[in-house]
Length: 370
Image (cartoon, rainbow, N blue to C red; front, side):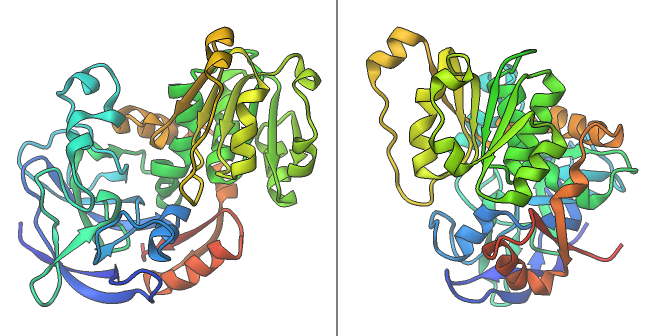
């Protein structure tokens, strides 16, 4: 195994156009795999980093974290995938050995907690530019590139009948919504569930809630097209943001058992806790675009047992959750094709960011030739 040349979209300065460059990418080392990318979603978080809305990513870097592709090289000690496997990747690479991993809490792996931004677990970036300088991997992934090197524990094998385009959605948008329902809220049959924000994450939460037998499932969004999609994938009722602003806890049998906040809108974030039933749980998945502090009356939590919870990438366990999601799609249980609105080649990534800014569809995908 040797170094290779990869074409990549490099972020060299926030709010400036991306630079499309040839970089050198390492061969995989122990516990790593090298992937040939076939599809990568254009997520709002990548957009926010590129536009300077978020600023915690080292620069220069290659963004992109919703990826799928083919394993082309495996490093020493890798046993979960083989060369030629079709795979989906997650931004989380649990070590599998720490206390949290052993307790099925790999999303909060102790090694990952200490890992810096833009690097592999051993502290290096696998990318080097023509001047010999390292280029960080955005979200510790770097998938806006022909090739990527990632820890094998971030990779899950998928059936070959699952299209790469669908698979690329699983590692972030889909697992974030699915995991908020299944892993964090642990929704039970007949629990009333409110999903706020029907983008890729919110719609995935609706699909998961339906699979779990939640009832009723109510979706809220400002976009009429997304409200229709909500009804199509499992909402028993949908409402506009204006209708949501006027609802009272008494309108829904004393409140909701589960609320998934996937909008990131501050007025919505502030209202969630007041709409919970006693011992209900609110899972915050959406992120406000500015620094925001949520204030909750302490006695309200003590007296009602309400639970307030964050959720990191659906608390994903890549080997289990991503494989299960791929199987559910293959079985016709997850109608994920509705997410894909446009496909663009890598050199049109700026146009893909424009699609997102204009609110065109749910996901534009960067795709590579088959």
